[in-house]
Image 1 (cartoon, rainbow, N blue to C red):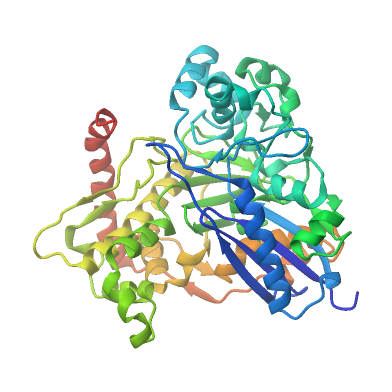
Image 2 (cartoon, rainbow, N blue to C red):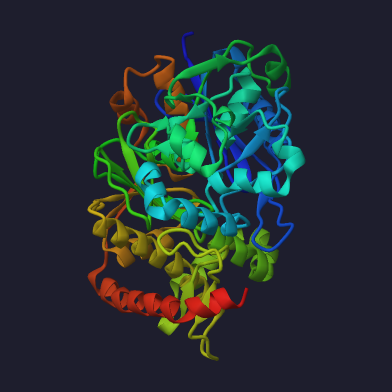
Length: 505
């Protein structure tokens, strides 16, 4: 193969992304395919994995055609996906029910009961993570208690990337980076803990074999080739968690390096070579061997702006073609005219409850400080600042846990906004480097395929070839002073409102 290509698949919350890269990390062709999130009841958020598969097959075919490449030129496939799925399949590989996704909080009462019965400290000692309804663990038990007809037919529980890997190859696997979704996964040993399986009530036989993220787990089958347009026999690696692959695609492969996440969800991932767990944060294995990521994961990331644009930007959408400026960029422009601190308007970005570090599924989004002087621009900037405040909250919590972040390496669509990136920079006081933000996650998945198939000698070579700084942001000391006061108010607001948020439900 003279010019081998690598294909990365990203199973996001609102859409899949597929990209073909050359060995130097340049995008040859890319595309995305949308699908739905279903909200059948308050606190529920679920998706149909079959819709992921259909969208991915459709998008792969489109990307190959658009890039004018031959499927035989693709040397390997890597897959990353959203966290904390609980995809129940039977022995024939049929999906038995929609999977609750990372935003879903329906299993809160199950978590409360298990934390009481087993002891939250005992669970945390094994898993390195507190038991919360957004994780996979309680979702499996919710099936048992609420969908016995589904539970009785379960053969395996899969994660998002392992489900697509299964559809491509027929191999049933569990990559190490997604292990953190199950509290019977020993975070120190990277192995299932049989005793904790028993205590939690999760049948050990539901859990696939744990494999390294860059391991070739199989090859594209004839059936999958016909559906996807890939060549039969193409190697597929296990892949990993989207945040981990994005972290790799942003060039974070050494202890202390940190990724800042600007996708649908927000947060950060600090690379560690020693075990450091904190109940307020999220600990998991990196897709790069022998490393952990201490993560902050929030519900309010780029999704906040997507919501705001959808609900309040009719005018900007109607003038986008005439002005030649997208609705989101127009919102950026009006927010840039508002000074740091939004003149007293503060936004709590808890639009689907909140994950770390407060772990409150009942948390609500709040605008505080509205008056007749406030404009749409104030609200847009306050939204951006609210997401930056949640990032700072997680970073400071990580420092308390003994994991201090250095330079932040931004990824995700939010990193395309110079204003928003600068706000995060000023809010945290951290230098922010932006590599190729839109492709970091699919690039990380493709790098796994490249290492697994020998296209790259190791991760050092892969990152040196593929990850390049496009711009750098330095914090403004005057804005940092303003934001220090905003941050104190942000923490006070949640502290004063949290009881009301819970008792409203």
